[in-house]
Image (cartoon, rainbow, N blue to C red; front, side, top):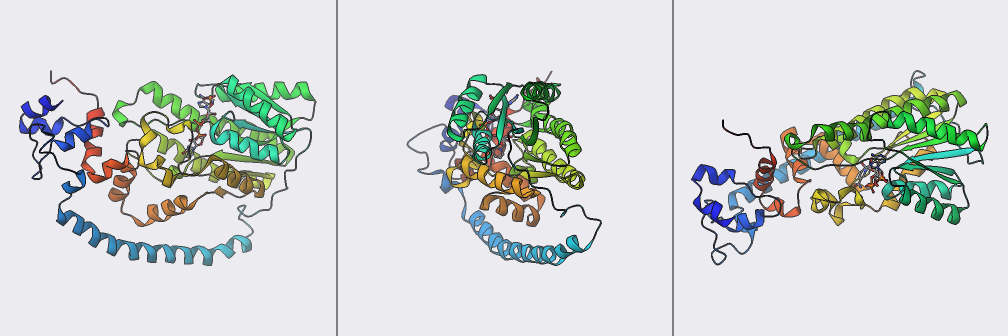
Amino acid sequence: MPDEVSHASPSTRLAVAPSPNNYKTMMSSTSVTGSFDAYDPEKSLPHPLLRWSLWRIGLTLIYGTVWIPLALVTFLVDQLFWWLTMPLCWIMPCTNGTKRLPPVKPSDEKYALVTGGGHGIGRAISEELAKRKFNLILAARNQSKLTEAAEALAEKYSVKVLTLPADLGVAGGAEKLHRDVNDLLLTKGDDHHVAILVNNAGRLNRSAYLSEELSGIMSMTQLNSISYAILMRLFGEDMAKRGCGRILNNASVVGWLPGPSCAMYHATKAFVVSLSQSVGYELRPHGVGVTCLTPPGTKSSLFAGEAENALIAHDMLTEKTEKVAAFGVRRLMKGARLAAPGGFSFFIDVVSRCMPEPILLYFAHLAWWPLDNLLDPRDCNKTLEAQRPKHDAA
Ligand SMILES: NC(=O)c1ccc[n+]([C@@H]2O[C@H](COP(=O)([O-])OP(=O)(O)OC[C@H]3O[C@@H](n4cnc5c(N)ncnc54)[C@H](OP(=O)(O)O)[C@@H]3O)[C@@H](O)[C@H]2O)c1
């Protein structure tokens, strides 16, 4: 790697972008003036922070001191309007938004279906529901994890816990799950039904958009968005016929933001946020509540692999799965439209409304890279560039 840097022409040198693993080595081969030298550990800078020139820090401080008070004023005005307009919801008879929902109480024939209930946030949500004495159906691909979770929950909370294998990342997976659930419940008794649906299964993939496989784009859309929509349509209809039910859609705080380097994940979650709001409004008069859960980063296997060291997965910015699940289920039971746990969700809400889009996109991009990249943000762009498929000049 050092040889490549030292022998390249000036224009090529900038294109030889560091990968996440080697970018520190690359940075240490850069002199204070910004040009690339041959790699020499003796001459390298003691800390990459020194690469920040004073004028850049100065400008950032000036910008920060102007922006923070302005953002605060914008936010306060926004809140003022919200509170002034809120009473209209109660006065205007045409709004479904605040219609009271019949409570969903546990009983022997009522089940909560949790997709991705074997581990992570789904498992914690299943535990919260089992605590409230709801019978459970857990669905995911990994049967051994499902069985392990089912046995533990059934023993601890004395509820019935059934499991179903399901792949929701393929076309037809959600329809098959709906059929399988109905067949399974028929064997238990005529009036056994799903009273609560938790759409939770999901995955993320951090990568430059042009590096995404087409099959990956299809399966992520299928898993994170289309299966949510189909299950909500099928189980929502059953619930509406009974005049009672609850749906919890696990979106993400990133559903409020675009996110370079993780574009598909952000887009699929934005789909869930929007769909939950609209369908929730439509289903409310039928006694069915739709709650959209928008957790911040949460410690789980979702970040395993490339995104593990991303800033968004940093301990200081993440919540515990149990806390997210407890908050989500509390809001679900109340029939709330939104469940945004933690201070970070609130921060994102404010920032997304008060920041110019290019800067917002820039920070959203940084969030998907390790903290070190903050020291020289240009490295994110270089890393992204390095990931792009290279086309032959011919
Ligand atoms: N962790 C976070 O920071 C965070 C933040 C906001 C929102 N969320 C959302 O929360 C949800 C759960 O994520 P998590 O953090 O708990 O991650 P996780 O531990 O990786 O859990 C993902 C769950 O989805 C299931 N799943 C994955 N692919 C599937 C497929 N093709 N078909 C059926 N099930 C599948 C997995 O089970 P199998 O592998 O057994 O199939 C697993 O139970 C996701 O929708 C995620 O987007 C997570």
